[in-house]
Image (tube, rainbow, N blue to C red):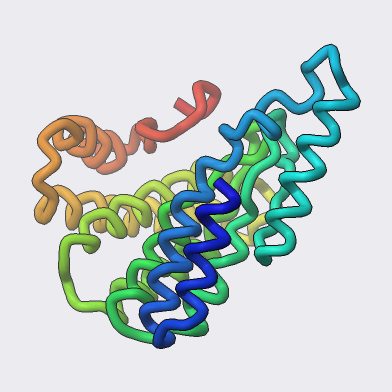
Length: 220
C-alpha cells in the first residue's frame, strides 16, 4: 500500500491543482480500507508483541511521512485513517466536479450514534448537506444527499433530550425535514431495493410512530 500511495501522491504533486485534488481524493477513498491492514486490524492480538509493534509503528511512520494521519475510535475498533486528506482536496479544488466529490465523501461518513446509543447531534452534517444541495445542480449524487439528510434529521430528533429548550417543537421540525428528504429521495432514486423501506419510514413518521429505519433497538 505505502509504495503505491507514495508514487501516486508524487505524481499528483506535479499535476495541475484540480488533477492533484482528484488524485488525493482517490487516495483518500483507498485509505478508507486502512483499518483492514494486518498491522492495524490485528494490533494487540498477536503472541509476538514485539514484532507486531514494530510493524505497526513502521506503517504509522510511513503514513505520517506522506501526510496521512490515523486515529483510534472511542468505541472498540481498529486504528484507521482519519480523513485528513479531504481538507487538502477542498483547498485545491474549491469548486467543480472534484469539489463536489470531496463534499460527497465527507457526507458519506454519515452521522454516527454515540457509544451508548443515547444521543446524536447531526447539526453540522445537516448544514453541510443543505449547503451541498444549494451549491450543486441536481445530478446522480442528489438522491444520496437527500437520504443522508433524512437519516441525520431522524437520528437527531430521536436523540433529543430535556437539555433542548423546546424538544417537542424541535423534534417536530426535524421529522418534517426528514420526511421531506425521504420523499425527495423516493421521487428521484432508482434504487428499487430500498424504496419499500423508505416508504414505510415516511408512513411511520407521518403517522406519529416516529422513525425506525436507522434507529438502535431502544429507539424503535
